[in-house]
Image (cartoon, rainbow, N blue to C red; front, side, top):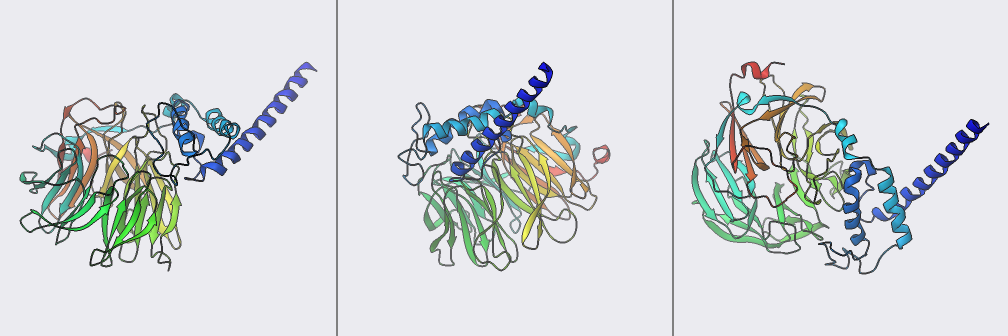
Length: 469
């Protein structure tokens, strides 16, 4: 009788507890959807949620003592609370009661095969000053590399083998170069997110000196894409921002407001756009007979979106979308985020279909190329926000059918990798990695090794045992 009563009471407690959590989830969804989709409590370890909730409370209009954020725009952060303390307590309870400990998350993460970086690549450390390298690109017509440094505000022109040919001071943080003649450089006013409008697009002369300002007044622009004769600027901003069109005479038109616009990639008929903050999502222009931006896929705000590229992984002549996500600059500690990594989407008719998720801690740059000479595309990825026991550079070897083998490439070099560029020709495949030797984020746990600002990796023609299982 006592045993039966205990079972009944346990069931009753569990039932009402579940009902309570469902109500709390509905409240959280109602209010959190003001900014983004509702994150799952499982997106972050339980240890990280108190700080995140403290930040969230500010965006609901509550002042929080000791927090660095403060209301800057009435429409971004309300002057008065939009919900009661009682309702806020239910939101807190929903996330804290349903999250799991970090050690539990770690047990579920995949393991890597370990090999040497020099097994696959000839590795060259470039002779560049310390700093934060915020731009990396390859100019195919010039057969030269470009690196941009954010702290000392310089642009470096490099030969194909990594020699510095020219150093140019620029009036801002270099974020993107238009890699087709006539060249132009996109500059942000500040390194970190701010609601300032000092961003510029400046023409580069044939001798690689700065020319005239083509357009200005951008709110921390981080990317530019050329599509059907117009330029499209991703203004990341801070609390505000914009996805902006520049026509052939460089007249501006804001196509979408809000912060977090981070990258746009054109195809022959479409323009794909990534938004990494506020409404974290992949969007498309001119997709499926719709001229306006249309959302294709939404992400949890705990994902940490950084960028994306297109590549054909299954040799069907249709490029897949690869989104990499490893940003972790919003937290004072460095929690394990189970949603960080690479997302591969297949483009199908009026939608995109997620085909693979490849976990990688703190990934911040990635490119695709055939790295094992088997005819299909593999992925090379590098990390910024890593734990010291996590790999900085990873080769994802394509096994077919969207299955990938994870290989951590270890070396004696160390950096916090921010940017990656590639060049692929008949004679060589190369990657240029631009990193940071300045630790602005104290939470980053840099791996041991010789600190370098940039590496040039040239794929070896005879991989030998590297390509063997």
